[in-house]
Amino acid sequence: MLIDGKGDSMSDEQKQIRIGDLLMQSGILTSDYIRNALHNFEERGLPIGKVLVMSGYLTEPQLRTALEVQSLVNDGLLPLEVGIAVLQIAHKEKIPLAEALQLSGFVQPEDQLTNKLGQLLVSANIVSNKELDEALQTNVRTGLPLGHIFCFRGFVSQALIYTALLAQQLIRRGMIGRDQAIQGLRKASERERNLEKADVNRGFIRLPMKPSLKLGELFMEAHMITEQQLLDALHRSLMMGAFIGEVFIESRLATREVVEAGIEIQEMLDNGTLTAPLATESLLMVRADNVPLYRAVAEVAIFRQRKNKSVQLMEILTSSGAVTLINVPNDIQECLEVNYNQAADVCKLLLQYNLVNERALYGALRSVYLIDEKVVNFQQAIMALDFALRANLTFDEAIFQLGWTTRTRLRVPPGE
Image (cartoon, rainbow, N blue to C red; front, side, top):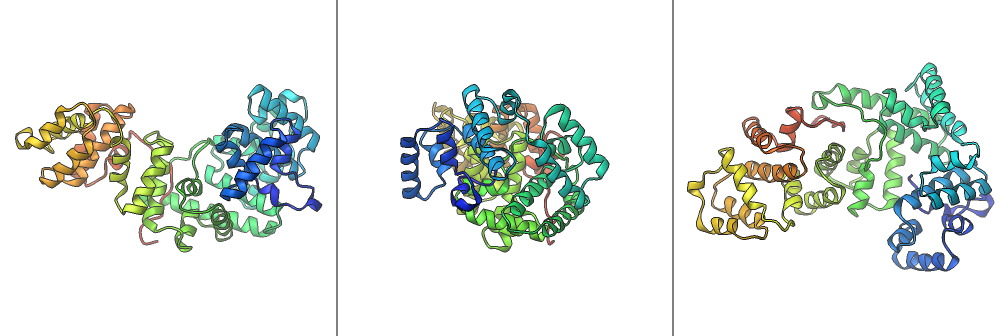
């Protein structure tokens, strides 16, 4: 959902319900709660939805459900009284909106919504009428959103579904015409097909539709862009048929290095080799400290842990032959003997004494985290580190080449 409290800015003439009013009419929040949230909203300059979550009045899932209902009501796809009733059920039973709609006995508004999405995709030559008919039949049988069905069937990528949903929203708000949206979708589809053929994207697979942190959301979480800058960039990306990252670069919101790091971080999130909090911190390190991503993701995952990870780090370095125990100075040995984490100091000392090259060091440090997360075992870590050093790859590139992770995000070839 791109809007967080944006219904507040709609005019009364359009009969748009604000998120606060919807929550109060549903009995989920009292007027005192809303007044407090609005006060915080005005003081901090934050969207009211985020204030409600930060203040503990709502959980993230509850806010998402309320925003989905708000969008359906404001788009004329769901009567207000039905939206209120369904939201009450979802809140009381602690279930997703789709289940609440089915439980309520009301007609689910998927037909109108999915038909519009399907028609956009057909008009842009992204799916055929036959594929749309098959997906709609599945939608009727299962109640799954059309976008999910297209992704599961392999008809459309998740990225293009998000772009089509963005186009829908922009059309409904009168920001672009239908013809503009279709043209933008065609450009985006053609761009995607061309990139999938590039050597840099060899091994790329399309993911099924699932919750994932979009690049713009990642940049917002890292406080690198504002919500308005993201909305403007999304608009431009659709009009240009370009990836959002390219728009960030063109608009000077981020450097190419930061955008490329963001795309790799998204892939790490897809593969379960990084968590969302570590992702944000890693991206900030790349931007603020101008360090390579392979170092950032290794440091943020290990340096703040309590257990002394320097012992495991040295085991991997010595087992791979990158470091020999004979050469280990006393101050490094002392770091290995304490109970609290000395990984940061050991890394600094190893580089200071010129006992190991930087890529080997941070490859080993990254493998410590991935062993803990059970992505690789100790033997695989040694093998991957050896392969990375011989082929001049990062550790993550090595485990991809070895087939232990997948390529889920498209890269733009260098120089393009």
